[in-house]
Image 1: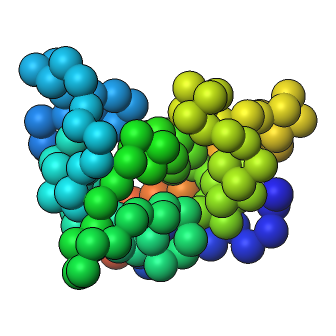
Image 2: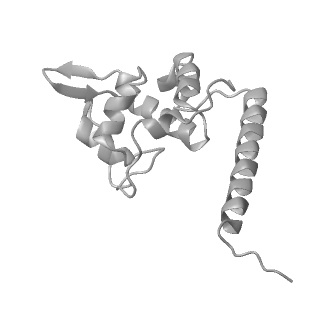
Length: 151
């Protein structure tokens, strides 16, 4: 799992800030999802860009149906997207998320990542190491350009 820790999602499509929906469920005003959702509907619901959805499709994470040039997403696609976004939120790479979601039937699993205790511990260690590296870089930058005082 520690392979290729470069942030793949940062090269992809960033999530839009704001939006009416949450990343883990339906917006408060929607009681039931239609049989299929358009790319715009799904993007609005999860607060992501159309580009992000197309990127996840290109990476093989989403598999919308096609009607001409129109992408139609099912409830299973919706569940997969919720899981993908949750994995990103937890700091996993898209490659790691793909490996996790491909082994599960997400519609039955309630759109959760199946993480073993070892995977959780490894991810915590990885994120703590990243945090330490960031703190060192911030300290170096804070000291950069400050005049050296002579006594």
